[in-house]
Length: 407
Image 1 (cartoon, one colour):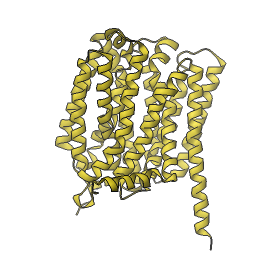
Image 2 (cartoon, helix red, strand yellow):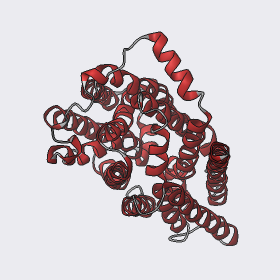
Image 3 (cartoon, helix red, strand yellow):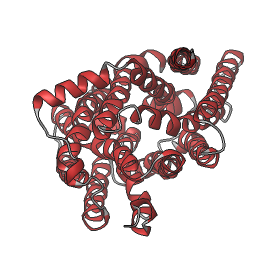
Image 4 (cartoon, one colour):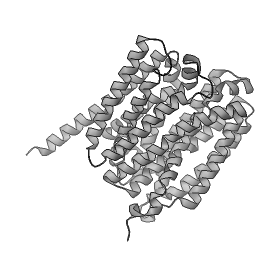
């Protein structure tokens, strides 16, 4: 029987998997240019509108614990279809919201469902591929995934100028319905029935305890989460960073998204090129050198002069390049620790990531968005936390290998 990874149909779902993974970030980035308009339209304050991010990210984090485990029991395809349908319904509600309280609730419902694609996409990759081929597929998905945050604020900015903030949620309705139809016709089921896990509360609790209690797993997940948070604080602070600190218009969000996502795409491409040629450990080490250099440059530029285009956004390109170079290797390292429960492991990994994102939205971003120097220091500090987690992980791994090799 032909191996599923050799199937042209499977190779053709790379675009679909990237779109599924990108839906969650896309629904954040698209409406960022509309914060002021939402506050005016709903007669509320900018901080109240900022909390729609927290309302989205906290349920997103909590539900990532369940998406993968449920897909381990029911299959990947039905879970994705159900969540896309619910996301579309929540987007209709956001489009029609008449108060900030309604928008909080509906954004929470979007957050509960938007993460399914991101979690299950990772599990599908490991269903189909092993070793360097999995890293290459993950890298290709990341290259396409990186396009979403470039396109999202650009579309959001123009829709805001032309039609207002409700048109942005109408766009999310159209996109989620189109994605549901694409999955219905094109997405195969990659988890055979005989490999599915029973959906029993006791088994799930033991599984979560095992995965989330594994220190190597948590260290890798922490590294991924802190690396991304170091960049994500710029996304969360984009309206202030770009419009107030740098003086760009609501249609000028490309000043952040183009260098950031250009770095993401190039880093992901390099990861695919290096798969099988450079060990994952050396790839990650190289990535951290790039991130550290970019973060240091960012701090130096901000301490040495006033913010401005383009030097205030230039280091973000280098940082996201290093971040995406490391991401496929770190993601696969985490999933490979639990090969029999990839969906559950992907859920736990996404939960750690989403919890860190929610912390960044609710606590870190409000503290650092006051100046470009604070944002640069925030990037550097979070990057150091990620590097420390990997250092501890590699040190423990080295000690384990030496003990095993002793006579």
